[in-house]
Image (tube, rainbow, N blue to C red; front, side):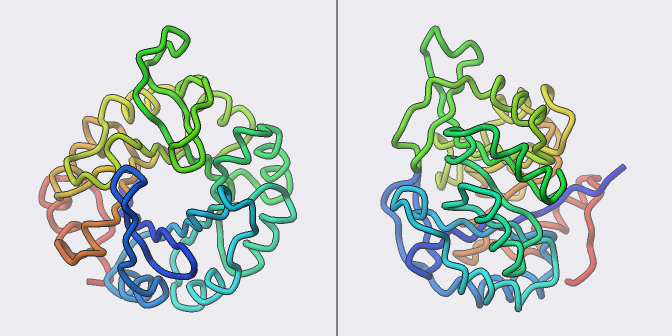
Length: 259
């Protein structure tokens, strides 16, 4: 059995670490490079860097910040935001990332998933899905893909998009619930379980983690292979070590080194 993974997300705007609730009321909370180093030294399994306004501003990702983070951490490090082409992804991987997260660009042009997978391998391609609950009859699963920080509806069903993303070459999927994001009230387990039961690639639960119990729920009842946290660590509510110890005590297989 593979170990479950603890991943932290660094949302970065204008070179600063920020956090929001449901993608609004974004606050500056510090330096992403020092946070990355601190979490790495504490035993974090993976790190995700999102340049959260690159797509909406229609600009390239901040490679200098990516390079600064990559120099500080020696764990898998993935990067997303403003990546639209194989060449964009090549620059990010060249700056030190091991994986790229495709979101808005993949919705606009799904073939970019295959192109990037062909160029760098499926292990380097993460399909990042921002999802909202939807009552629309045209969304059979009840969950719709949204883009541009949750501000733009796509009319795409989340389950169908997950299946298509896997078929196109994504090696992993991040399921980020906009409804739960930043609330600290727990992951959207129904959504996570539906995606995990649909695809054969690893699924990362994202959005809503507030207590170690929430991660345990996502990794068991939610069927996720990994859980992504932000506020829990950024605000000092919990440490990497305390979260991992709790999950270990619940009987989950967790990498416990580095504490």
